[in-house]
Image (cartoon, rainbow, N blue to C red; front, side, top):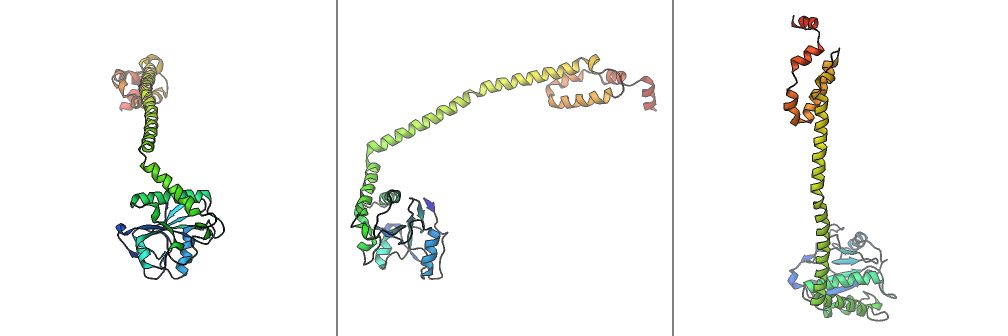
Length: 277
């Protein structure tokens, strides 16, 4: 269901009244007498252009089966010419013109699901589902509602089947069991992922140990690494500091390398005396 409540065009006329949800007694089915792909925005614009405060239906169902919520259920739009009926009714509009043809299967199926949900929510039965033409002298929801295709019968059969499924304990149990199996499969997948964590942790420790060993090899062999020569001290001291940051666990080992020894190998005595002065 696509929520369009409060998002559609409104007019300058006084707003529709409100009611308690306990006042709801029936569902009224309409047709829009337009194309079956009309949007709720376009329909609201057209009705506002006729002087209404806003769209006159609580729900709109387009030909492809999309359901739009267009008014809050506690709002009382002018869906019929009778105030008392409006006060007690939920209006569902099927987009299209059903004077000569019935709605498509997707649209009827969506309407059946919506109506079944509303009947269940408000403790109503299929006898409380009517077309507007049954309440006043209008064409909506089209001549095919009770004659010709008689899609009211088709619709209510589908609605009743859905309600029966709601109430049949065996159906409910089967649905719950299917959900349990789905959750068990999800849990098994998560457990398999968790089972991989110890192996990954062991691999990380192995890599850390290997890196530490390589770092130690580069600095423990001082005679090889810190060879006397111009620029060696600065170059290797920079590497020393970098690896010291990367491998804190080598601090104690690396601390055994004497700075005096490094300087003694990298700087000539004459240069040292010049630096002291």
